Image (tube, rainbow, N blue to C red):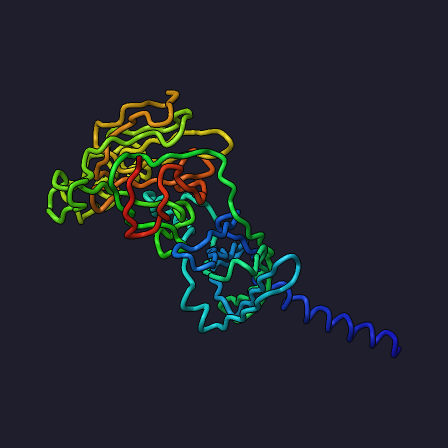
Length: 353
């Protein structure tokens, strides 16, 4: 009789415990971008930086909250730094970058990264190059609306990117770098994190122009060149130039256009260089693009003119190297131009020969 009673008590306890486990948040962690690259910082600081998002992918309930996180940075298997993040700290960097809302048929292009996302958190690191950090481990605890908690861990390789294609700057002459890489406070979405904005300067006095007219900008209409040989996989020529610098139209401006999400890039050319490296040139003048899909181009060939189309806020050329043929869906890659000695960061003057 006592044996039967003990079995009944054990069964009741097991039954009571099972719902608690069943109610734990069901999620996994995903790093964005999938490959995390570190880059050496400009200014001879002997430091390197890397940035990544940890996206919480939910399988049932997406109303999850970050509770705590532990990050461990390692070199050759040895931990060189450990950080603990509290609920309050995580709340300050929590965001929702990739979730698609089905009732919003015209989403910002980065939302084409289709993840059933609860939230994501952005982590930024700068360390001495001598530490040779090559991996990160993230342990994140979340809670649902009822307070049920669960924890997941993710290991992330950290490495330098080895550029395969020899690139030249996409225009010649005097210029200046506007917004630059995510590691120095520039472009911040995973798809353009290593993109840069380039504008032309007047060779005589180095002036850009503060006039409220596109034509007054020193770079307006400058010839845009293929940074390396390859095959054109995307070319667009129909996005109207924005009437004035300093403004960028809203969604209604793009909706009537073909493929409105891509219209944010303005008149754009993408060249496949092989080896999973693609050059992307955005915001060119309406009607100036001289190539079409399937064309073979040579290094230095004119492909269009610098303009102010799409989400540009003024005449400039957005350039990025990326791992696939379409913006917003493939991550950008660190790069350097062979014919520019200066580091490519905001405010840097250069002369492309």
